[in-house]
Image 1: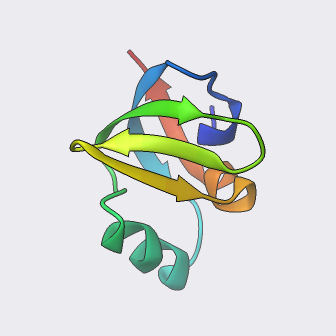
Image 2: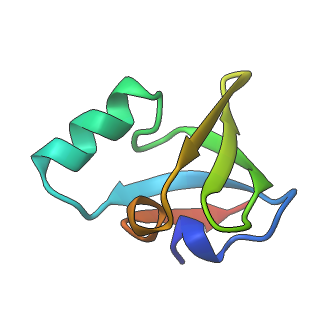
Length: 71
């Protein structure tokens, strides 16, 4: 399941990032990488997630490249 499919309020763990090196680095700098636990704050248009008490907003295209497993 991709991050863009998660509903607001749901938590999940990042399993894989299917994009290229640039995307992976961009997400890593925002604290989003394999093994991280995230919670969806908003999923209207852009996707806003909470990771390690930080709120991060990414575009829907980036969110489609993030594979998550729900808890």
